[in-house]
Image (cartoon, rainbow, N blue to C red):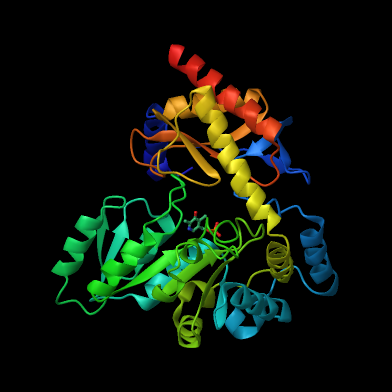
Amino acid sequence: MSSSLAWITDALQALKNEGLLRSRRVTRMLPDGTCEVDSRRVLDFASNDYLNLAGDPRVIGAAMEALRTGTVGARASPLVSGRSEWHERLEQTIAQFEEQPEALLFPTGMAANVGTIAAICGAGDLILCDRANHASLVDGCRLSQSQMRVYRHDDLTTLERELKKGDSVRRRWIVTDSVFSMDGDIAPLADLCDIAEQNNAELIVDEAHATGVIGENGRGACEALGVEDRVAVRIGTLSKAIGAQGGFVSGPANLIEFLWNRARSQIYSTALSPAVCAAATAAIGIIRAEPWRRHRLEVASEFFRTQLRLAGVETVATSTGPIVPVILHAPEAALNVANRLENRGFLVGAIRPPTVPRDTSRLRIVVTAAHQDADLTRLATAVFEEVTAARAE
Ligand SMILES: *Cc1c(COP(=O)(O)O)cnc(C)c1O
């Protein structure tokens, strides 16, 4: 090894000393929604497979059918020759589901955020970005070379003040998650729309954790809060409730054509696997045909919150829905409690900086439509016992 990389060893040691080193593990997903980690069978409360569709036989069957009649890789950028009938059908399916004229696929949700923001925002623009926004939104803002201002989470006063300062800029934008990925709370989208309209700004909303999960038809938080017509750009992912992989933007034809021409993350990357497109198309069909999935998810999420409260565990007061954070502050505490829960058969996320702010390391427990009430009750008790035991140490 070249000694010029010795600094990396020091940097890793520094991360380790702060309890922030991340390790790689192998998780084996099983078709029944459980998984195996280090050869131990556990219930999975760490995925974003909210509607339990990633392992659905119909979704897997659709992927297999595409594989049987085609190729594994798309073999080229969508622009050149990678866009197959599976891609076109999925784009049409997304557009219909979202009730938008058109949709465009991206390799991932991350690529959708980075590529879209970098394409439509640019030098001379002002972007206001919530501090709790997903890293991919932040990276898109940076890459766009716009002036970026970060406002404290949900701090609408600062947001408005900073927007007003930008009177000499070309265009103004507000960029936000609709459901925040680590707190599980919903952005005040109606207020953000009011502020945008009063200050000649446009809204870009990332529905990654809301698509399929909330709204009368499962279109997300913009639908749930009645602001779909007031949001300029809506971005989504196929990798969470839809159970597949990929990202998308849905909207008017001119926006989609512009992104097709200018969004570098989809132009300069091979198109999604046709099998993944077939799977996502099938999954969206199931989401439309089986609204009981998101109703069950809502009931199960509320049930779990109630069980946690009865057990004496606090969650983030503003959080709603399937993302249930339990703040433990120190990174070591989050890891320790997550390990203890794993030993008892529950896999939960341990989330540390820089994903969340300093001193807010947490368990991120995700309820899905696959979870049974009895498991949720057992987990709530286990969380209480292990948090208490860890504090006593
Ligand atoms: C997961 C996530 C993404 C990225 O989606 P991928 O499809 O996994 O790349 C984007 N935005 C938010 C808010 C997310 O939580």
